[in-house]
Image (tube, rainbow, N blue to C red; front, side, top):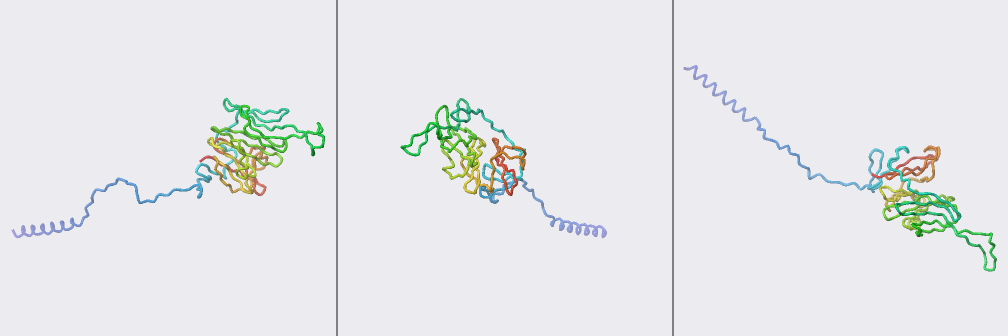
Length: 274
């Protein structure tokens, strides 16, 4: 009997110790793993025009354009616009006939004949002809633009149509300076361009290069973007840095490739749609 009481006492002590330990075990509640957005995180936006960002080798020039100084001339992508046009030459001048759907446009270097004289008492001689030359743009036999030039040393480069607008580029072969005309307005005169050249359409928006004093840049959709180059060539690049007779600048519907020349070395640059 005494032994049984001793066993009951030991069992009671053991049970109390076990309950004491179990009260210290932490209880694990169910965790909600549903992810919710952190509304306290500040939101930032990047202004590409004031703080260009770099993605691989492309630098953002604007919200629409990038610049790539590490591209290669043979990597030019997109569709090259060749246009539907024919050249002509006759006794009244020379030029090109462009066809845009049912419309026929003509760019020409033409001239009129006048007899020169230095004074009213001087009798002009018929064999002493002076020709006044003009760069002109015609649409369906209607004269849209006429620009007086010095002589025949001018070349009509390209005429492009986009929407209800047109843009035209011509050069002075003696000075290598270019003019860009948009809807009949000579942009050189409006924006004080010393030269404007190489007209393309990117995403059906006008793109061309310009030089104002010693600063080069591009105009895209009538917005200027200055470039950090002291020289941009717009003539075929032969042999050095670009192969034999490579057209320069060259463009497609999504990008334009061109060469700069620094310290007698050519460098290929690309500008395209982002």
